[in-house]
Length: 185
Length: 375
Image (cartoon, rainbow over all chains, first blue to last red; front, top):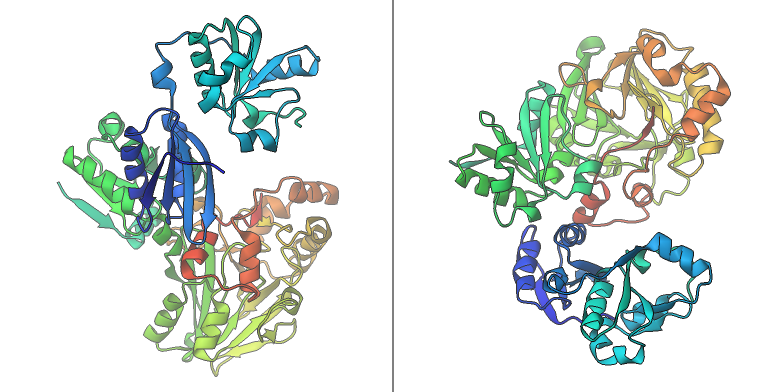
């Protein structure tokens, strides 16, 4: 289950109000935090997905409860890390070749537990983004580490935070498990 | 500067008259790509309303200086917001009243012909979705064919011209739109006819429509002759009206032919489709005026907004009627199928009486173009 940091009640509101309110509320959230938007306007699903895409927020999904749609969005973190170190990236495709060539890779999966349990790459270490700052000491600082998440956004945030703590060889996998077609366990 | 509502009827008139205007569609890109207000002389700009919340400054240079801008969204709320923002910037703007929802539901009656002894034939053009339905009127009686779910339009129209609806037909079990046939028949005590081969799973009583069973409208002799013409569905039935008009249902359109896959049986039915088009229709008079149940593109509209063409002309010009080789025909029909209409399974179930969703849900099921043809 996704636990939101904030809940916005947009029930009974017609388009464009659910998005107008979401945009306002999103401003007050910290990067990486999750907003739950409760709406009854059926068009809100497609519009929120498209809006998230155009603004850089991550659309996590929608649950339906009777007539109420519960949308989950994670606030974009890109602006806050712009001053940080540039994390090298690898395309998912090239990364897949490495995984399938049986190279002995260290992979860090920073998605939430339920996402990780639904399917992850064999041998991937799991530390959700929210715990990376405290727990990254579980990994070696001079090792080459591939960081992966759903889309490449959270993994970038995680890598930024690890770079600050002295990790030297971090590579962000872009995009992430969203488009992964290889084996999962 | 003020913001004026423009009704679907007014926009339909502009489209039929091929007027030039500028349309700003503020729905999201997928919705716009899938389905929009079509017209030969419309210039389009698609920018989702949520990209304009901070202001419309960025799109101002892309809008025409001397032309009215029509803003369109799904239900009208967002288009009013954007239209007001544009108006504050000094633009002359209108918005589509009721949005694409109203556009999808608008029906325009057009007279397509005179019948014997003062009888008349009307075509109801659902311009936003490409559905065509018909009313045959004779001596105070009326018959309806392929009615949409906007049933009030037909009953009001009949009342206005002083006719009583006595017979209601569906040429086949529709998969792209919700039929209003049963509802109208119940409200007016008319007989509701369906082809029995399409009606095997329906949950209500109906009159089986079979070839050779002519129906007379009025006390003169306007005959409606059913002609079994499978292909789009197994039960599909065409009608010859007053020996002059061929109502072809979803079998033959002006610029395309029916698709055979919406009940899941493309491979089985493509043979029936060919038999109907290349043998059964071939035996009919070239002089018959074909009146289909759909149109796909605006080019199929005549100058008066109606959709019709002589059968002989279609045999000369319609690509789907001119594929000599059977294997090539099979490949064209089954190898090249467009995406299936939105919610077509649910629509079929609704037309069989198996489910009865509320009006809001019905609207949602019908979103998008009709997609009943292969070209």
